[in-house]
Amino acid sequence: MRIPDLDAACGLPPVGPEVVRIGLIATMAFWKGHDVFLHALRSLARHATFRAYVIGGPLYHTAGSQVSLDDVRRMVAELGLDRHVGLAGFVDRPAAAMRALDVVVHASTRPEPFGLVIAEAMGCGRAVIASRRSGVAEFLRDGEDAILCESNVEDLTRALRTAVGDRGLRARLGAHARVTALKYFDRERMGGDAISVYRDVAGVDR
Image 1 (cartoon, rainbow, N blue to C red):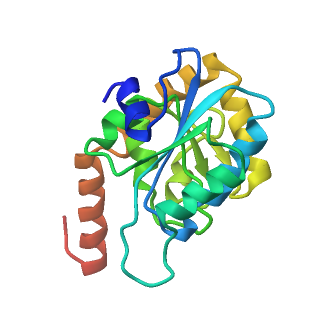
Image 2: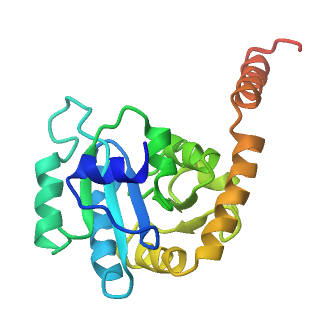
């Protein structure tokens, strides 16, 4: 997916390469922080030029477990972000969507045991802003391979302003993120670590 494809998926006109592209890639679970993300973007719009994308859609069947695309669309309109934010829904190739972004945001307001989107975005060499509530945050170094923040509007706004305002920082974060992803999140490495844990729990000799 090229950058114009993502814009087209959202029904947005294309913008130039100088515009920083920010994305939240998540299901529509209510604790994924869509409201925090959008309110932070409203604050960011006073200081920076950007294009943001909400990527993903409803997934769960449990009543009250998620927001709808219409809910998010209303929030975008109420916050005056129509020119800044597009809703892409589900995409066939999420890795391609990530590579079309400059910054990938994880804004979950509840603790997550891992945070797969963070690991995937890091593997794609993207600059990542991650909630400290994600389990993967324990592998990250704030300001080196990611920007860590609390799951609130003020702290996410601060992190966004830092990332959007410094192209060199985004490049460094992305490069270091890929190294960290290959070190800790490689499939064979993680599989081997999991097997070691299972053997220890079961009392099986290696």
